[in-house]
Amino acid sequence: MPPDDPSRKKRKRPRDRNLPQLNSSPHSSQSQNQSQNQSYREGAFSPHTPPTNFPEFPQRLRPLRSNRSRLRSSRNRTIGDRNTSPTQPSLGNASREAEGGGFRKRQSLPPSSSSLPSEGLSARARWEARINHASPLAVAPKLQASPVTSPSFSYLFLLYGVRCLIFGIGASAIAGTLIATIDPSRQLEPAQTPLATEKEEVFDPLAAAMSVKLGAEIAPLKAKIEAIARQNPRYNLGVFLLDLDAKDYVNWQGTQQFSAASTIKAPILIAFFQDIDARKVRLNETLIMDEGSIVGEAGRMQFQPPGSKFSAKETVEKMIVTSDNTATNMIIKRLGGIEALNQRFVEWGLTSTIANDLLPDVGGTNLTSPVDLANVLVMVNQGKLVSLRSRDRLLNIMSQVENRQLLPQGLEPGAKIAHKTGNIGSLIADAGLIDTQTGRRYVAVVMVEREYNDRGARAIIQQISREAYQYFNEPTPMPNTTIVPREDSETAAFKIPPNSPSLKSKISAILPSLQSETSAIRPLTKGDKRGIPGGN
Image (cartoon, rainbow, N blue to C red; front, top):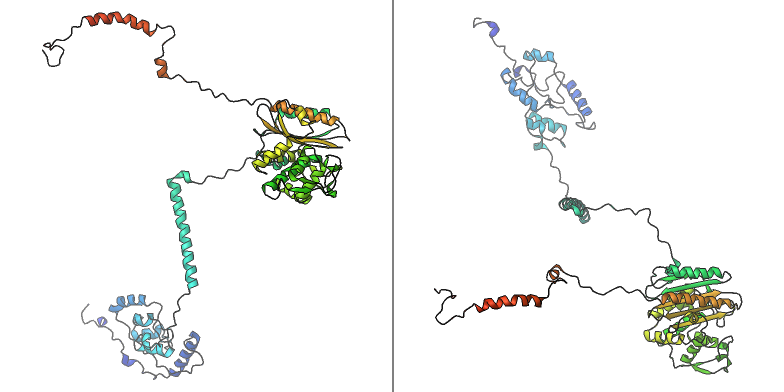
C-alpha cells in the first residue's frame, strides 16, 4: 500500500476544548438534583443538609493505545473504585464511541486518593480532594484520642494466674510422661479390687469386752465343758477360761449377764486400791459403822454396835475374806456411792457389770458376766488398773478367802488361787486367778444359775475347775535348743577313720628308717665347703 494512503492516517482525537464548560450545561440543574438524590440514597450526607451546587467533573481524556498495558495494571490495583463523581452522570457506550471513536478504558486516579481512609469527611471535602488529587487526610479533621486506661490489678492477677496454671499443668504432664518413659516401674498400677470371697468384719462382743487380744479357742477343753453342760440341763452355765501366757481361751456363754451376788465385791476392791494409789483413801484411816450400813446374811461385823470404828484396811479385808456385807456397804459409801462405782466400771470397759443396790443383794439386781470378771482380773494382773504394790496387796487379800468349796476343790496340792466367791439362793459363782505347779497362770470364772439352794451346782463348779487345772497344769512343750555341731568338709578331711592304725604305730614304723638315714650323714668340718652355696 502506498505511503500516502489516506486510510493509514491517524484520526484526530477530540480535545478538551470541545467539552462544555463547568456549569454551562443546560441540564446542570437536573444533574445536580440527580446527584443529590443519589447521595441521599448512598448516605453521603443527611437529608437535612441543604443542597449544594457542586461543579461537574470534566470528562477526562482517554489514554492512548500505547498506554493501555500500563493502565491495565493500574486498573487492577484500583479495582472496586470507578473514580467517578457521585454527581457526574455516566455516559453510555454510544456517546463514548462518538467522542473517542471507540470504547476506551477510563484512567484511574492515583491509588493514594482512593485507598486512604475517608471516614469522618463530608461529601464536599471528599469531592474537592478528588478534584485536586489530594489525600483526604490533608483535609480530614483531627480526631481527639481517647484516653488509654491501664488494666486493674485484679484483672492482671487473674490473667497471669490462669496463664501460670495452664503452664503448670502442661509442665506436669510433660514431666510425668518423661518419667514414665525413662522409668516404667514408676507407672501407676491399677487398683486391685478386693476379692468377692473376702469376709466382712463381723462385730465380736467377746473381743470387744476383753482388754487383751485373744488367741485361739481351746477346742478339747471346750468340748469337755460342753459335755458337762449337756449332762446338767437344769443349770444355766457361764464359763470363761483364759491362758494368760498364750491368750488361748474357752468361752461358754461368757458374755451372758448373770446376777453378780458377792462377786461384785472384786471390782469394788479394785476401786478401793485405785483410791489408795490416788491418795484419796488411806489404809490406816478410821471408818465409823453407821446404823444404815449394818446388814445381815454374811459377815460378823453386823453384831457390833453402831458407831464402832474400824480401819479402812480391816474393813476391806473383811469384805473379801469373810464376804462381810456390812463392811461392803461401808466401803461403797467411802468410795462415793453406787453411781460413782458404776462410772468407774464403764471407764474400765465393763459392758455387763452394774451395781443397783447395796448388799445383801438377795434379789440379784447387781449384774455382771464371766467375761467382765475375767477382764478385771486380767487388767489387775497386767498392772493396768492399780500399781504393782497395790496389786500384790489385792491378790494377797483375795488369796485368804475362807470359802474354799468351789474352784479350790478342783486344784492339786501346790497350786495357788486368789479368788472371790458369790452365793445367793438362785446363783452360785467363783472367779479367781490360779497358778499351777508348772508355773502357768490362768483365769477361771464359773457362774451357775440354779434352783433355790440347789447343792448340785457346787459340784459342777468343782468339776469344771478340775478339768481346767488338768489342762493348764501340763508343762508347756519347750523347743529343743541343743546345738549340735555340724561337720564341715575340711574337718571331715582330717578325721581319722575308726579302723585305721593309730598315729603312734605309724610313727614307730617310720622311726627305724629315719635313724638309718641320719647315721649316714657326716657332720661338716671347718674346711669342708660342700653343701655351702658357692663352694666347690
